[in-house]
Length: 273
Length: 325
Image (cartoon, rainbow over all chains, first blue to last red):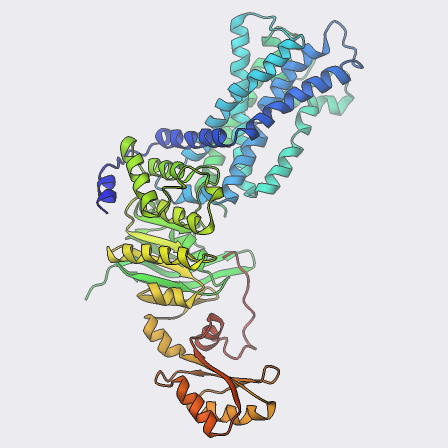
């Protein structure tokens, strides 16, 4: 008991969202270190799609004045950024399902720390995880054709969008609370980039479908990435977020954060009921 | 005389859809006491623990833990409690050491203090050897010990143990019991839920029997056992001996015997604590009953509930509901 007493004396009562968030962030990084397979598998997916779409569909897709694979790489980066929905949802549903979330909720810690630590860890792993996709992209002929500051802005925007979508995912997972259900719903999210300009130009889509695709935040993200990397200019006659993709992506990200940060924090604080 | 209550709840109500999990649960656990909340699956035990540990808000009633209201002063309650059991778990993917350090940090320990404290708990719960393995590789007993260690990172004023030994082997169960006794000996208030009469008997100063969301009986283990009695059961050689055997048991116990023609048994609840097995055997033998087997044992939880709750007649009471307990 002397040990416990001593330790209790050593306790600082400065539980802040930042300190607690860092502890939770550390937890997620330790999880990845313990089982890196999941992360590697997640990163392999867009590369497989790049090679598959790029060489199988690319040969059938005639894109005037542009190489399809150079069009596809920014789209895959945008789709990866949107994937925060899936990973965020799965992570928080799993933590609810397995009871870790309830352990956190019985501790006298900040209510913001758990979602914050989770989304921050996701941001960090995405930043590293995008590197292999970029390298394979460069190998198949994609190039950053714009200036370095625009390219830097492109990466920043991708990460901002990822951060925003992972808060949305985090909130969804806290609603679902079931690991299997979140996994199933997560695999259904692959349809979201298909309804955007991530893999195909949306100009030739029929009426309603084109409107849906142009308003899809992933389209703005994909167009912004192409714009900032100097691969393609946004099409001026598209819907506003797709025609002004940088501003559009900033607006979408801000809207997602404004709505889902408070929702996720409140949901976590209140628990399952 | 003033008693300070570490846990005090009045009229707790909780509904999950159609399931009325708690229907006015009153609990009072004196500071430093070990209270056993005994009940079958679905009686509302876990719901009660979830409310008292701030995980779930009650629909009605109120509760104070360590002097703080569980709804309005949830933060203060969390700072005063330790939780172990089904509700609050550890991270499977992290090692035991990583788990304890993580929770230690979240409890406000820093630097060297976290490491020393986590190591001391690993040592105390015989987890040092497995400390760096992922928790998912732990056996049920190791896992439960890690859960308990996580609940003891601070010195909690009130420790909640939700079914601490369910599914454990006897050795692990004894370790958990020893840890609980040690804590109680140092003045920590413990509220434990269990499905086992024996566990409540072994650990608790007071037992609250809960049934369908409210307290059906309360008292010390000795008081409850006196009220419950033991269960006498005899096996006879042929069916025609059942009725004479029943007559003897009726005379000895004063309770109405239950006949089972298929198994050729007669059983009866005996509340008279002076009744012994040799006496039962002698009396039956004297009455000429061809006896094959006889036993006098503590009643099972089912029998306890049959005796001490209002479901005695079995007809007016609905069957046990499987709530989200």
